[in-house]
Amino acid sequence: MFQYLYLLESDREKEFLASIYEAHRKEMYYIAYHILHNPSDAEDIVQETFLTLIKHVDKLIDNEPHKVWAYISTTVRNKALNVRRHKKSLEEVELDETWMQEDILEDGPDLLLEGYEQKEAMIKLLKQLKSPYKEVLALQYYHELSAAEIGKLLGKSPDNIRHISMRAKKKLQSLLKKNGLWNKKK
Image (cartoon, rainbow, N blue to C red; front, side, top):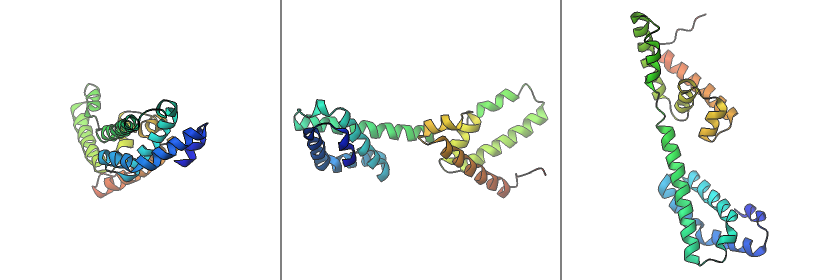
């Protein structure tokens, strides 16, 4: 947090935020942890809140302490709820099965049934993968998003998404082999 104090112009603002940090960082952490149940996410929320406080220090510095605390606690709570909502939405990224309906008119019944059974098996295997592997593969193949788009959505770099995708494919390949569904043509 103290590295952020260099962003401030006056010593008064620096002292104000340093005192806020010392007085309220534990309470801020507890609010964020209570919502997120994850220590590193709670720490991130505390840091993000201090960055917000730095942006608005001129509005806060002359306020009464209870008003400053109300602003801080509301900011922490809202940021934590946003992170929780974002994580929950990522967990709910389901493999949309409606994409299979597009093939109904194009393929005959035999091919359609065979393809449907393969796709059902694939969906079951994908659901066995852990996060973030299943989310990345679902977003990449079923929702047809690029690595950059997935990275933006998940808060990761495109390179990191490509590495996650590569590891996810290897895990999926081992699941396919384990379930006797791997027919790699030579």
